[in-house]
Image (cartoon, rainbow, N blue to C red):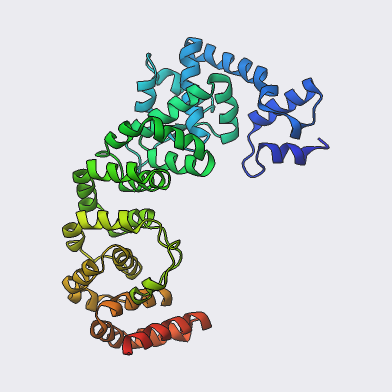
Length: 379
């Protein structure tokens, strides 16, 4: 084709899909339009014929098949996998045979693994998913599926995040219409990462709804924090606290208001989980994660950060710095030094040879940073 570049750019050059390519070429031939001018409506009749053929193989009614492939397509537009149990709730018939047939014919992708508790499905290309969805659902039907998935699905945080980035007005509308349902959403089976994204992006749009979710789900969140690894807690608090860069506690007052997105919400979460955060075992935690943990807690509650350092004094003294980068060591020592300079000095002295070795291979910027941290500790 002389216009191959236009074709590849239209269907997403780095993720080509031959079926979508076929639809575009057929539509281009029939309409006489260049491929890069083809719109969704131009390929609908080819998509409808293709889906009708699939329906015959799946031995399902048009309505049921359309609902199933349409539901998968709506979520796949945002690259969110949809779990089989959600599809079963959406359909009035047994979906297993249809899903198996579609997967066998490579119309959908099945995902299964140790990180998943169920089997999940995606259309293999987000743009193809958009074409399928436009045939199966209007905007209201699409909105209802998105709303139900946020309230019932497993990757509800990821979907909330994608909506915020790509269709913020739709997310605002859903929050306005479903305020009470969002507050009452059951978070007990959700991962802490999904909950973090869910609260963060709702908070961007409606702070009161986010606070109410935290209030209603207080006991569930306590259990999540109790079970969570330090890395997961860092990710969660980092989702709630919006900041740019890092610095020592003494520099926090210099940060302008745009650096911390919602300190009040983060403080409330830290306060409600104070005892759990104090009990976290740092003995098997990396230097990087400890530095990030102390930083995140310091943005929420300086007194709590002091308590955590004191409780873990012996653990912090025994940490091996040999596997950490020079910047990770700097963050680690800097955070401890803001709380207890004598403890930071002791750790630095104990790891003197490791620091010398690290500095011998460090860049100019890294050396400048670690010397600034050490100078601050020695003041």
